[in-house]
Length: 254
Image: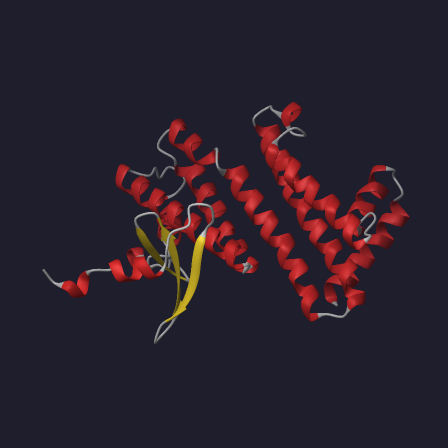
């Protein structure tokens, strides 16, 4: 037996805690990697492109490989069994890394990985072999949107620690707008599946709504510019809407 292959000493030094997500970032000689302690071992994930470091078809991810295939073969292209299996592998890998980024509070990277997963879901919906396989992925779309929205809002708030106190309400306002955007994406999904009547009671919707209102209270934020714009358009106050659009545009440039 080759004792050098035994990883027990690593597992002993890093005990598994079943009540939290066990994640750390490790600096290697040539790069950083993420490590996630699981019950029976350790997962090691690359921090860019595919978490397993592979380059399917010499592309950065399997999504990019399949997107190229779809562009080459057209809308009638349908994933075969092997491609479905490889896509599912990539879904799991990016989920694990997204959870790591959230635990490490590297929110922009969590947003990046969530966007990858949502793009892969979009591709699957177009080229799925059957409805049941589509549903098996689409059922997780609200949860991915929830993670993305949470991370995007927290990323806006993270700026607080680097900016003066007077900027905090502005950062909170942008965080609230990220939450509103996520809630709107969730509403569209509920509309798509004729379940709008269940929207307000949905657990993910409730969590995001509570998060938004907690930010309003903590930073004393009233109606955001985006919310004021929607109010003005709804009330047919078009001059006010134009003024608010200009303010949003100026803010974007700054």
